[in-house]
View 1 (cartoon, each protein chain N blue to C red):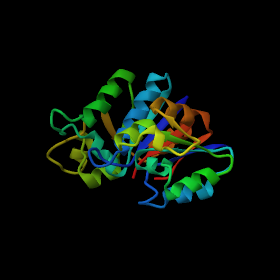
View 2 (view 1 turned 90 degrees about the vertical axis):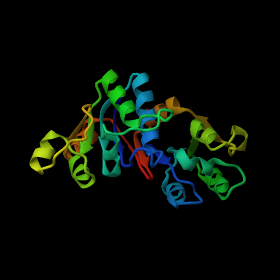
View 3 (view 1 turned 45 degrees about the vertical axis):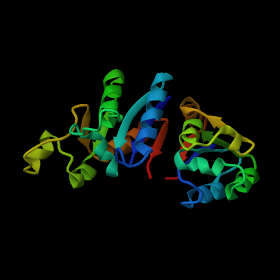
Length: 130
Length: 101
């Protein structure tokens, strides 16, 4: 079955991102397809490559990236939510005159249309949030 | 149209569990996870609401019960404990997933 996942909360703040990761990982292991994972609102914080948690804690960003590497996942960060929270890729840095980027290379920044498309193209949309 | 309703808030913190059980239709199911698992505990104000929902199946996520120190014996009769694989199966089994976030 084809699933789309929406995440509204940031890492290390709310269990939503852990629940979403474990659901996504389990679905993939069971042979389901994840059409897209869409990070919305504070969820965009899941995509910063600059995260450095203590060594004995889970690395939430790398965990998503590793899953994306293994299963060729499409990890999409909402552009409007990202701009507000300082999540920047090369295109956004140039467009908005910023001097740095922080998006992890396994994530990409795009628009809300990507969430709508994921909902339309998938058989189930599963939302994780506060 | 059957639905899987997911509730992740304690019924003693937010009203999402109460709203959910007021709206859930016969033939649908409710999955309690994260702090939502507190609604699955026997002897609480939520127990009666779980038991009086006609034709509605209730599930609780085992790892989230365990993370909160809640053993299976404390769970209300009729509430089935599932793992993440069970969560995925339920999401696929029902026609849509409604998140009470």
